[in-house]
Image 1 (cartoon, rainbow, N blue to C red):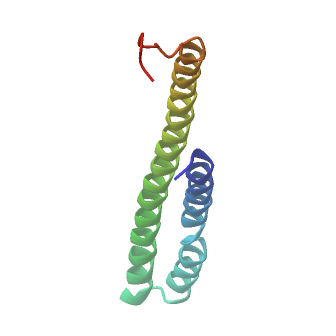
Image 2 (cartoon, helix red, strand yellow; image 1 turned 30 degrees about the horizontal axis):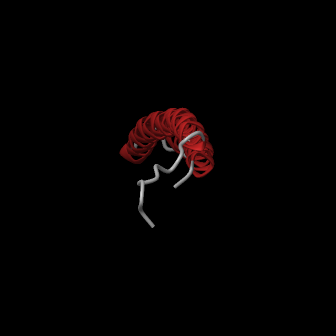
Amino acid sequence: MESAQLRTGAGKMKELANEAKQIPDKAVRDAKTTDSANRGFMTGEACEALADDLKQDMQELSRHLDDTSKGLKDTAKDWDDVDEAMGKDFDSIGSDLSGFKTPTIPGGA
């Protein structure tokens, strides 16, 4: 896995978080209409209660997806930072090895 894949996943999570917030909008509007049209009946109140519950659930899901998105972004940054640090370590080792001379054994092959 690379940091670019993590960032792509973070972007998708952010999109899903935004979409989750919008899911209950129509249900809330329709429930209010139903309640207004059916005054005195429990169906309208039940529809509103269900729509409110859906709205709360989707807000919670949205927060979870948003938090996951942030975590993925942080992980991608950490990945890049570690990759860069390790690259510098290997560059240093390569530099040290470039001056290395193979020892010769007197009288050896």
